[in-house]
Image 1 (cartoon, rainbow over the protein chains, first blue to last red):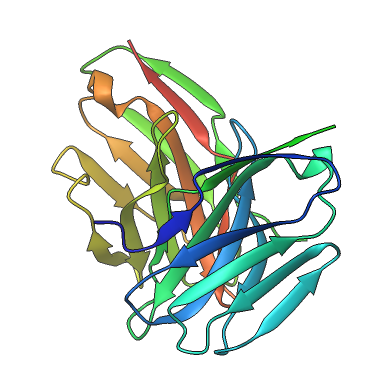
Image 2 (cartoon, rainbow over the protein chains, first blue to last red):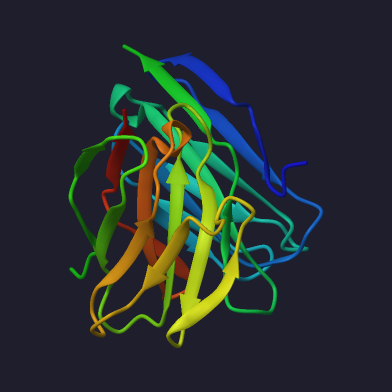
Length: 112
Length: 111
């Protein structure tokens, strides 16, 4: 059983479309991160959300942390081919020393 | 901008050989991690390290694995006797400002 469930796992859309990726769990997280990973490279941090209900924007990307701090979403507006990549959500469970656990990722392809 | 650096970027080794993967975490971070990612699969937690000792380790991190912070800056992962199934990308990370920051990874190929 995955601690963090990401959906969809694969997404292929046309340039200019909008999309939303979801990250769900039954556990409460003290913080949740979204990363983007290119093939053969390490995950690159996009954003960290900490407060329940928090919304952060990064250009055309909007990240939301659920009120109960158990889920998050990533919305991309007007997707571009440069958005193609693997998007990973990762969470640090409440309490303890902040071990980060990853979801399986969403592989996004934006077709020109 | 501070970053996590890993060396080497690629290591090829024969089955049964020992390998040491090296990492320099971000200097003011206190928690350090090793993760691995087998090709096409998810990023998997191996071990966390805090205050010069292991905080937590996964089932993957068996007796063949060890970690060390020998000199206060480097953070190493040693695999004593590599197996074919150890072939993967190995990522070092350090935790600060509410998130884990990752190095570029070492691609380990066991032949």
